[in-house]
Amino acid sequence: LPLAKRGLWPAIWLAPADNAYGPWPQSGEIDVMEHVGFAPGEVYFTAHSSAHNHRNGHQRTSFETVPDAHEIFHVYAVDWQPGRITWLLDGVPYFHLAKAQDDAWDVWPF
Image (cartoon, rainbow, N blue to C red; front, side, top):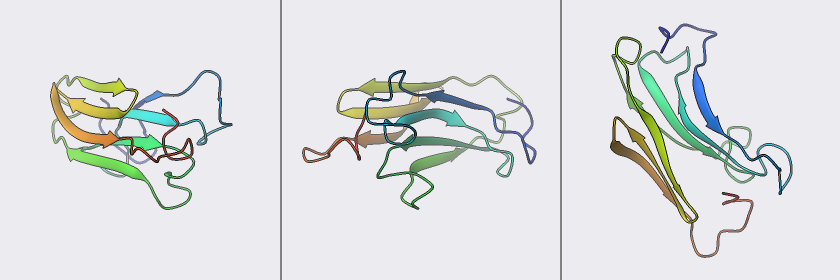
């Protein structure tokens, strides 16, 4: 990754092709990773939905400190199943979300 500086925002996202529930964030977005310029050495893992996003202050996110993110190659991955999402860094699970039985589309559009 490039050395984090303000204004850089390397990211890998997964977004739906059809927007079944409406535009962002209603149909969901899974951020496999984000390395934001204001937080050098931190990699974020996030799931956006209508109920959970930064605009309404209910973000479902986690971050890991990766001090060498800009020095060596790392593998960022998501294991995405119908009822759960697990984020992995170099093959190690770091963040996990699971769909509750009563979650409607606004919470779990994935």
